[in-house]
Image 1 (cartoon, rainbow over the protein chains, first blue to last red):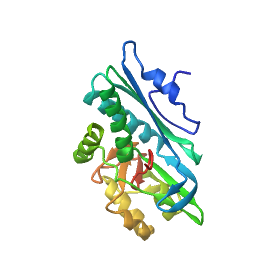
Image 2: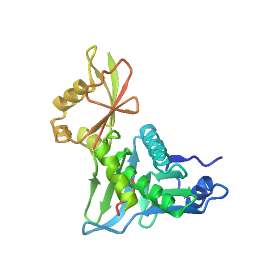
Image 3: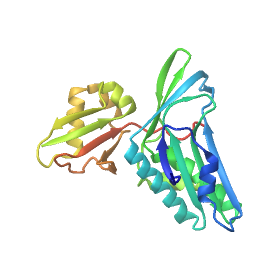
Amino acid sequence: MPVPQVAVTSEPLESDALAALVEAKGDGAVVTFAGLVRDHNQGRQVQFLEYEAYEPLAVRALQRIVDEARELWPGARVAVHHRLGRLEIGEASIVIAAASAHRADAFAACRYTIERVKQIVPIWKREHFDGGDVWLEGATADPDDRAAREKAYRTACA
Amino acid sequence: MRVTVRLFARLRDLAGTGELIREVPPHATARHVWDDLVLEWPQLREYEKTMSVAVNAEYARMTAEVHEGDEVAFMPPVSGGWAG
């Protein structure tokens, strides 16, 4: 089965497959990023994380983000997959690959993508730690919030 | 008319259900649907200012009109991606 450009899946993530998907002949750079489940958070010893999504909207939001990245860095191509379900320490919750003629655009497009995922993709994580569990909550998702988009862009280009 | 309501993450925990059918009047908006939920589960009110809404799996505004058979989703602040 062909690798999709964006996906949410309960299967383990493969950054090599994503890199192969975005690379084009003549590219000078491909950047891959994997976000891993960390063993500690805010002073708590984490046991595992549980991710859930509103899947059809999550896929649309991911597609929107890779389209935004394409607009901002016209030569860059980005792919992103997000994992769902129970994830153990050290497993990848997200992988991103960005390819471009030059490294600056590939790094920036990759960084922009992770920042935007945290802003607008309807995915939530519940942290199970020694002594309990808690839903972690970040940003109020609003894809039309220009300030959020500009913040992601500034971070990407910093 | 009837709409399907979806609740996610902590909103689902607070209401004790992730999917329910609600009867709403003609020309009801997402706001009507939410206010009706809050009457039944006042604990949802804590998300009044921070939740997002989607109609038929597209982000929408609380002023969006809903129609027979629509799926109306309410979502707490998102936390996907990576913690670092």
